[in-house]
Length: 219
Length: 256
Image 1: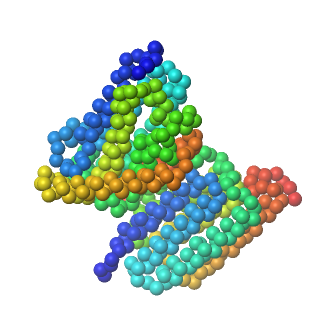
Image 2: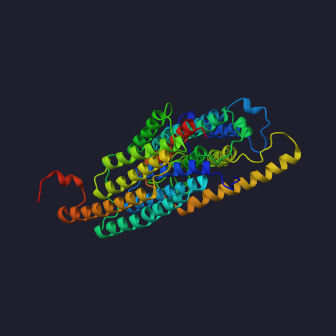
Image 3: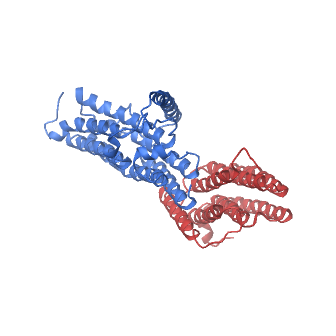
């Protein structure tokens, strides 16, 4: 098929975009910027699924891309943005480590992942690079969850991790059947809503979303 | 011109060294043709360290005059250099590995397209490097003499007359040269590999257009951004460093 766009190089670009938006979480201070980074991350993920759909020409990928866009680019960013607005916290992310140090640690994580999955791994999916990048995304977002104090940032880190897991699964299996993906998206949406309610409750009881307060036992 | 009593000959020699090293770097950078006998005298790494020579002597001269500002700004400039230099080297390594040579003329002649993930990342990091090295606004302000903000201006505060002229001229040449290197490395289109007159004319027009676009982009960044606080700079430069690092890793692992 003679296509106008080279989809396989487009996939490389999009996966690098996913990696970079995850990395940018380490350098961002404002919560709105974190949500924006998540928006772009999900947008790149949807576009990646869309380009694989064009490459393979299967219809259920189009649905998966559309669903991904609707849930992760529209519903969840609006929901988290609303929570942030309600809590009236704008940019106190307060990580345990400084920005540049956490960026360096993330770079080291990427290097470890690249060298660990470089040889001897047989990949059934469309691209080994995408698998490497998705594992790197999972580890970086795990690091973000570990190194942040605030509950809301940890929720965003968890969402990034879910994007990485989705990407890893997609690159290995060409996506699951549509009904399973529907279930996964629904689960995730419920998870985000429950976590959002938790965050608001933590804020209401402790007057802060700092999770260090949870080490004290209090009714 | 009044020269401080404590100043040593280094103070007088610095403008000449800065200017001469910048002019030397000019000979090593291809502008419209890759045919020259000079390119065998130094590769892209040599160019980086020829710039570093000028910077080193400027910092020394800042200390040499014995003023408080000079010492302060020299210290700032060196802190800056520590952060910028590895970033620049990593960018150049990506390009050099993809071309199989550190010679800038060879990199241009192989002319790999910019549209690969590693090149785009290297380009983003190189843009940060260019802004940092030329001392433009998000990192340093070349027009101010306020002690809180100046970096490059503070070191040359004691100069006047022809010395100041030489240093400023060298600074302008450095800026043009960095834009040229950027155009050479990332957009090597229409650069002639022969001395054919038609090719040279095309190359000249293409060079003018490239310079205009790069200058416009840098001016756009400068006029839409505010000057950053000095202690926030490591965050931005660390981000650029990670971009360059990921670019190199991406090239090594993805192979493009």
